Amino acid sequence: MKKILIVEDDTNINNMIHEVLTKQGYECVQAFSGTEGLLYVKQEELLLVLLDLMLPGMPGEALLAEIKARGNTPVIVMSAKDSLDSKVELLTGGAEDYITKPFELEELVARVGVQVRRFAGQGETVGKKPAYKNLVLHEERFSAEVEGRELELTKQEYKILELFLLHPKKVFSKQDIYDYAWEDVYIGEDKTINVHISNIRKKIKNITEDEYIETVWGIGFRLAK
Image: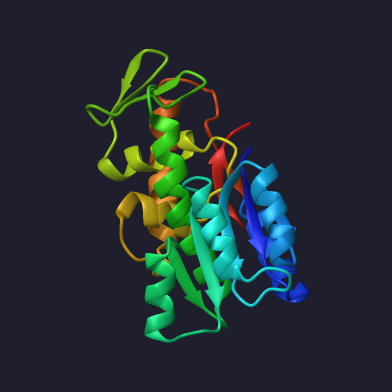
């Protein structure tokens, strides 16, 4: 499983980010200096890098250049520098996103999800149909089948299943699901998500007794183990 690298010299901030992302189902590694971050960049297969700028050993700007010289790993810069010039310089230097300190952890998680879907999801779908157990998605016609029988889905139901099948080990919050399936800003639409998950489960139950979606209390949903 690819990992998220957190490069942040403030121990409390680094640990808080690590904790919240781990609860979201991501595997994370922590670096507390630019030079330590570079070692992970060289040694690990990374999903995403969260990068502070004011780092001991090696500044974040230099580490960003090293990351981009080695591939297309997405980078979200975390910095107290909030001038437009600073943001433009970093974005043109290869960063995919920029979040200004202090920030809310919920916003950071949302931004991480956007980049993960943008980069990781694309690579995982090349050359294969998303499938799990006896459930197969047909992207070309936005439909699905279970045990060879057609599963009638709405657009949002299809997108929810697509998200789960693209990342079969990940737990998705309701915000993750809403952002992906509705392509809109999440404003606490808990009932909407619950109704769509319930409908998907009922439609699958009409074909098989196998469980496909599991509720992870306090976090969200994932594919059943």
